[in-house]
Length: 164
Image (tube, rainbow, N blue to C red; front, side, top):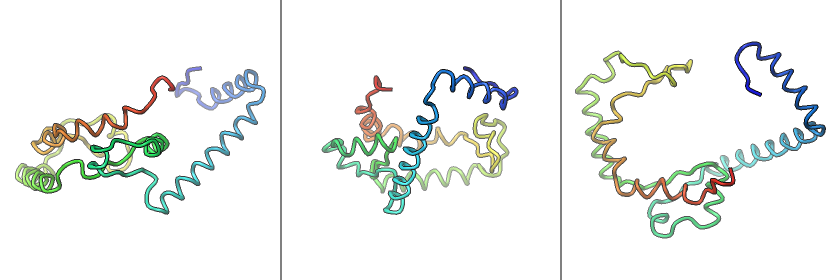
């Protein structure tokens, strides 16, 4: 059933009626889903209290050993991970300094953007914009660094896309 923005409350009512007809034990299923979600929220909150719900790894460890089974499960459960130390810190600092100078010298913050991003401009707070820094020397260097070629492919390699 495709929903539209027209008369949404009526569509929700119709959907619920159809659901009750097609899935007689829907109440029990919703209770099970709600219980599972509450447990997951508690697990995430506990992980946040202990440091982070997003697993974090050192690039050197991943580059040398890959992900072990426990790490794979952490990444799959969280839906992603942070891999620290992917780029050499001294090089990152140098590129950030160049980028900062570029931004200041070109009056980046003083110019009113002539192109608006259609996704982020829908946000109510601050209306952030995405513009030309993407093509800066620092960004190109980071995206083309050999370590970056290894990093994103590692977590993706153990996701069973057939399962989804």
